[in-house]
Image (cartoon, rainbow, N blue to C red; front, side, top):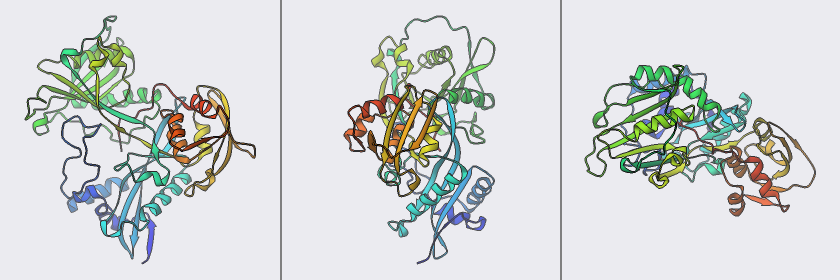
Length: 431
């Protein structure tokens, strides 16, 4: 059996896609009610296999994209596995933006599973990302038990919440000096980049958009779901400082009738945020507002007369992070609490340069990481360090789970204070 791990040629792209479940109409995600899906049914819906014409269109688009880095596993010259990295920038603590390789579209055909092909593809992508200068890798895990073996670990969460219109009374506030406007898809498409750029600058975990991110917005209806509606908020100076997409789907059941599903929502300031939610929570002929793919903690909860009215009905991990270059990654972010800590990474077979004892000295916005032969404050595995990196996970919980071994009395508390960020990291779209 001859194994090759390499970038597929143009002639191999159809076979490359056929190694991916979604291209064959096969399940590509755990069949469960998803936190980023507004409806009551499991996600994703069934798919049909891609046609030869679709495969050709995908190949032309992907190969023309400089951010797309495919890798294939070939056994005896036949493509049996496929994956890819997409080059993003991700906002890290301190508001900086670091290059990141986003793993996407991964699969091995059923006849060739359990042979180590996924690990070989992942190693190839890690090596290529390091050569491109990407110190981080991230993904959304289609199955929770697969990617920990490669050093990935949950770093952000997303939640689906809902609120009854009858319970959605907001506390009083100063009148909004801006204005709300319902617009068409073309207007929303034009305004999204600037709004997202402003939001991304202040949100840890947010990603740079790929080209054409909002080009698919349309005013056309989608079956019984109806068309997307687009709401914008204008600042008093006329600039758009908030956008929301919502849908009013028809339901076969009385329990789901009168639902307003908010499929995207971003605001660059509290006034726009409050004004848009005030309208969406009091839309005529609706009973319930559902907002999937939201952060676990919403400022809206503190704007409600009854904070319990906002109920989280689903929650899941979102981005899984993997540090590829510990020095570039840790020096690339800021630390809200200055401090010094020494830690040991005992094992990282896929990125062996991370192994060793490191001394991190952080002075707020600047940090320096250097190797040391001194005693460590703690031993930490690469998964735990990757989870902590964006600042949203608990060092205490990771210690209790055995991913972190403190060697000095205050090591866990010091690590937690240095790495934590507020608000929690969040990213608004997947890849």
